[in-house]
Amino acid sequence: MALFPFFKKPTDFLHGRKAAVSVESSHPIFHALGMDRGRVMTDMTVIKATAPQTPLETPWGAPLVWGDTRKSTWRRARFANQGTHTGLLAVVLGTYAQFVRRFLSSAETHFLPGQMVTYYILTDNPRSLDPPIELGPKRQLRVVPVAELPGWDRLARRRMALLADAIRNPIGREVEYLFCADIDQEFVAPVGEEILGDLVATLHPELYGMPRNAFPYEVEEVSSACVEEDEGDYYYTSELYGGLVSEMYRLARACSLLILQDQANGVMARGLEESYLNRYLIDHRPTCVLSPEYSWWDSALAPDVLVQRLVSLGRNQKRESM
Image 1 (tube, rainbow, N blue to C red):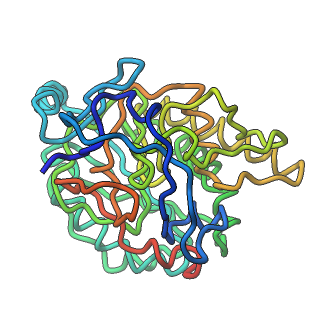
Image 2 (tube, helix red, strand yellow):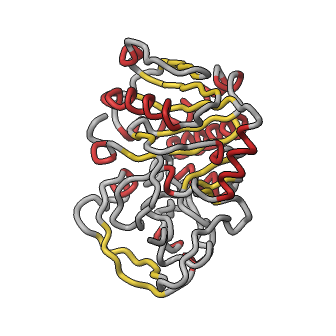
Image 3 (spheres, one colour):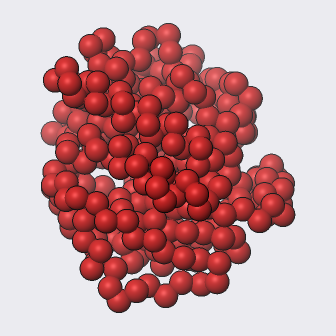
């Protein structure tokens, strides 16, 4: 089976015939857009199924990573020899504590096996990690207490600031690379050194392959996250992104300042922090882009991915469970 039967080359999603397609989803981005009450008709592009090829490069020349390609094998070998130390960070608030052990257990099996990894859990309830989770060699866990932030909207306003503060102290002194992931996910297949890069983003699984006019960028000009019609190559998920710890600090600090600026003006982008992340990644294009394999959930829009590596567990209850 072809991975994406309607794709011919990396830029094909920008062209083609328009068609009305039904969309049904309960992912937070569609909650934020008011698209969670039944089926919605969306204008998008359909490409004829001819000679499918999996794109391996973005339009600006960065690698587009699929885990089982020859290029990814080369990237794994290259970084494996460097002996990197990587952080994996997740925010665990409220009832999301139910996911933390499953997340860490799966990461122990599949996330950068054989490499030095420190897990950073930012939580309002450190006791949720008692008794301590048993970790393998070269692995350690750091629990960073944070204030309680009930409600999805409040977390969206604070998550980037929490990330910037955590990187400034203690993360920035301890690891070379840092990846941020939503805690309600599970690693189900190897995620190796192929993901490493200066600035790494992951393609949104529901929106990969869609035309530019289907991307839910922020369109209100009053918002700091606003994206003009002639901007944007892909739409990225906020469920997994990373890179050099210095680049992650720049990203988190810039996004938190944009959010604070909007908050002072009584504005919040409709896609919450994901809108600000996408704004930043338009202005600072990723040096490595991960395919939807690396942040997957069942989707009525997205085509099947043959290998799923990081899979969402609780997207149906994201807003309700906090």
